[in-house]
Length: 239
Image 1: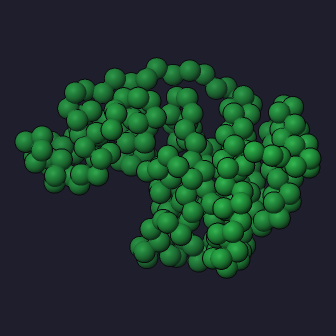
Image 2: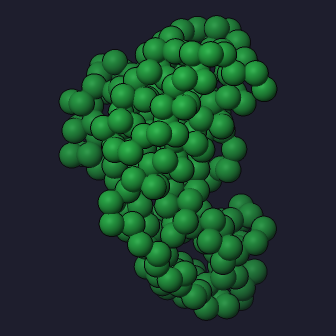
């Protein structure tokens, strides 16, 4: 894949970056290079802590954290369930809370189009690299078709640099799930609902809930979807 000279210069700068402030400068340069409204890197640690950089309005970032939108954001939830890049139009925005969330985001200048690359790293780390813009569907499809491969590579390079710079990062032990917890999380991962899982395992839904909550606690997950994603990323279940 050919890389033009300006982009190569930015990527070389990324490779030499040694502070989080430099990451912010780099992501702004990438936004300007691709002539989009926003680029954002959003990191979620193994205990649910967050940091990132990007070009969204800081007021929106503050509202997002204050209202704990991480729990309802369709982009985050959708990307927890996927391992491949996601166009926002592929996500489920049907819930009233999701539509209200999007409407509020757009009031802060968030565009109507988005492309997010989910990234899973060591110790349960999860990150998103997002490109966001305001345009019609045809123009957005042309943009993503042209730039998809480059953006995926940039996302992973950016994440690798962010992991190097994350202060206090230390290895953590991978928790052991019980055989029943593995069974429950595996069935959820392949798409069974809770009633189907309980029936398959010949247990009550109450007992199933105990297994799921125990697994979620061990994995430090915010919800069941997050627990499934962490179990997959750490090799605790295979589907």
